[in-house]
Image (cartoon, rainbow, N blue to C red):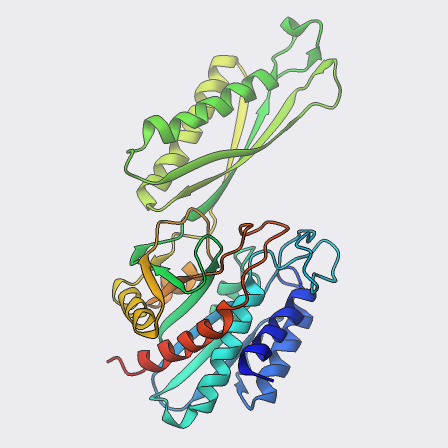
Length: 373
């Protein structure tokens, strides 16, 4: 079996057996088995799911990270190796990321005696719910690590294309919940109540002015109401309506200003309508900030490797890798996967031909990063 086919077979086995965040027990067992069968040592961290392995000797440590969890999506891709698990799918390509880093591990193992230090491989659980990176850091996976690198496949880029950028890359991901309390009434006598649906509707419109009128047009920001729920029948004005949504930015000052404006708008409308609006804010993953030097280094290695390289646009999605970069320098990169359907789509189908080259790239990147003073 060729090296490429081995990696594709592993990817397909992972794809057929996806597991949700925090439930990656069988996935962990598979990755452990494949690494141990290659003679790669596993580090004895206390982890419910996920694997940390290490190759080489010496003081300097470079880390490579893959994510291993899947999404609660029913697959419709139609591929022969579709998910066997009802309602669960690798719709973000974490199976691809895992096979890439497994390949890098095999290549690095073959050159172990020539490495100028150690390469630590993090197969991280629970990226999709943004808890996995913290769990690995708590377990000690970043101890003595000089720099860390990771990837995401990019369905909008052709295979053979590489992109990254220094500084802000992926957005922070915050969530808000607004609970509107009015006064219920018969739909035929609305004057006897205080219509929470009308107030909620005004609130949705008003929140859209934050991005268009309160934030500098050169700053990136998204404020989206994604759920509105209220009432249970056709002829009653409900007393309560709940709205939920997300805020995405790349700047902490903008993030704080948006949070402040949401509270101010809610308070102002509540006062105007003589109602009450409760605001609950949930801070999600922070902005992913690539180290400028390591991002440039990763780009140069990619160019020398033969990738078509380009500076990435800002991403409004979130990425748990940002937590590692809070603690140590490193870089996150995009590698083209040319899928007709995007990430988190039930028909997502990345081009597997990216896997071997990406594995060879990351092995080269880690080996060369060990030589940097």
